[in-house]
Amino acid sequence: QVQLVESGGGLVQAGGSLRLSCAASGRIFSAYSMGWFRQAPGKERELVAAISRSGDSTYYADSVEVRFTISRDNGKNTLYLQMNSLKPEDTAVYYCAATYGSGWKSRARDYDYWGQGTQVTVSS
Figure (cartoon, rainbow, N blue to C red):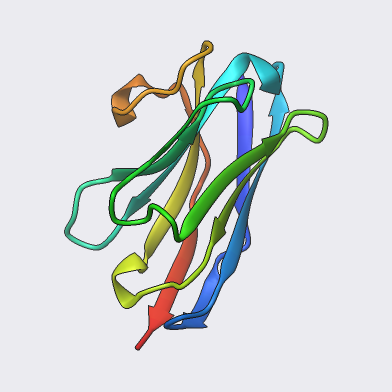
């Protein structure tokens, strides 16, 4: 079992920044590739960014590339998502997720463990 707890969400004005954190406990964090997903009301959950277990490979959705940065600290068992230049369309519940193995996955169903989510609201 891996327990994931997100933090750092909140209300921010357009153009602002937030940093999300995901604290992991349980099994070895460094054995898992990680992803940040988001889900807005009435929309499907989508992959925003992902990172391999070593941190040497990352993925970003086109909508967030350049603005968001995913990173991890395996020594602290923590995943991060730095979000800059936020837009109202970034408003969603953000989830971190873990998938066992070296490479990140693009489909939500391929992730084994999920956090409870943290709300990000960007006002215009």
